[in-house]
Image 1 (tube, rainbow, N blue to C red):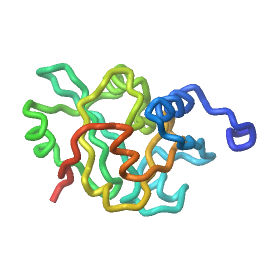
Image 2 (cartoon, one colour):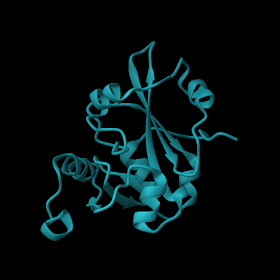
Image 3 (cartoon, rainbow, N blue to C red):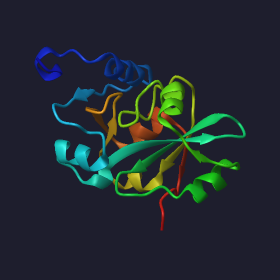
Image 4 (cartoon, one colour):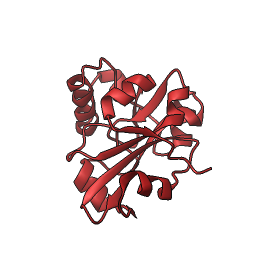
Length: 165
């Protein structure tokens, strides 16, 4: 039986549900029967534009040993030079082990909030153009719907131009 029949969430999705509640947001995490690992998959499952998927991409800042979270529109590629400039230090691609250690989640299910360690966060300003967006919720098949304002409230950080031109 899947979550839609039992109402129970997996442990990772339940952590995201609690993180949303801790932010004062009454939003519902949904675990889908199909994969939502990529922006295209997620958009197809929920029936929205790829641009409405808020994808969480984690980078590593080697000088400060911090993780950097970029919450980008699913239609955009992140311009790492722009993010480096915003951060003020070098930036590296994060491997799966680093992502799991810093966020507590696997790649493909990293939510924009509720990380094991607090990230430096940049929010793609293109997400603010939509009435609603969808974000990963802890597993490669869990999502939640929210407004861009709720997303900004949930993940904090700096709204910026992070997309490739």
